[in-house]
Amino acid sequence: MNCRPWQHTVQRTASSALAIALLLAMGTAQATMYRWVDGNGRVHYSDTPPMTFQQSGGAEMSKQGNIIKRTQSETERRAEAERQAEQARIQQGQQKQAQLDRALTSTYTTQAEIDLARDRALEHHKLAIRGAEIRAEAVEKNLADLRTRIANIEKSGRPVGPGLQEQMAQSTKESLDLKRTILNNEDAMEKVRAKYAADKARFLELTAKP
Image (cartoon, rainbow, N blue to C red; front, side, top):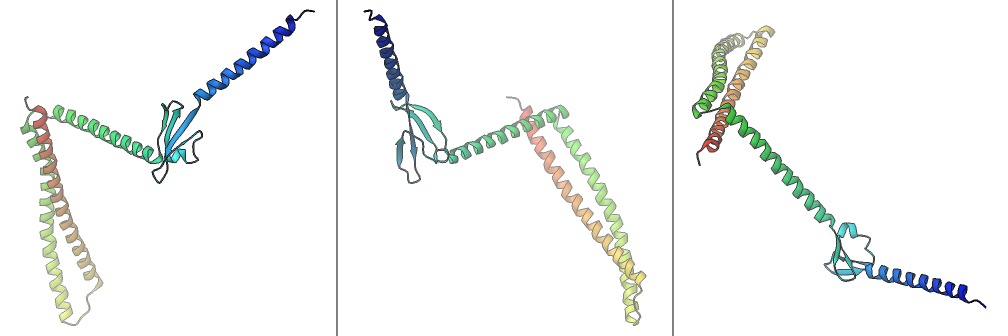
């Protein structure tokens, strides 16, 4: 009787069993553990991650205790996003400053040129203020005349006509508008002086010899 087919079957079965055992052993050796800290500060270890793993964060570890993967907590992810956003803002600010510096050094070659540009910008506002002041003088004279006329009419006991009242309202509004124009241009002049003073200081920094 030939037993070789039976022997081959036994050998194949044994080989398959051995392979399965090896695979299981390898799977067990390569299985991971999870380490996390709960809300009370207690450290936990488990073969499966908790339901809150994405919120609490933790580490995926091998059986030998080596960290395979680190999962950030929700707080850590938020802090990291804020840090990256701040870095982006800083970088944008640096890029903008570099553009301004290039524009400054390409526009001016001396401090005197900056002073000249400042004076030109101020002259526009000075003319606007002077024009408003001249017009304001005329309006104030008209208002004084209107007040006198209205006072005389009221003293006589007669009613003030709607036309005179309308003139008074229009002149009063114009006077307020002119005062506002003067104040706005004065504020603008202060901003111009501050801008060119900053440009001049930065120009000195950029062109200073080491």
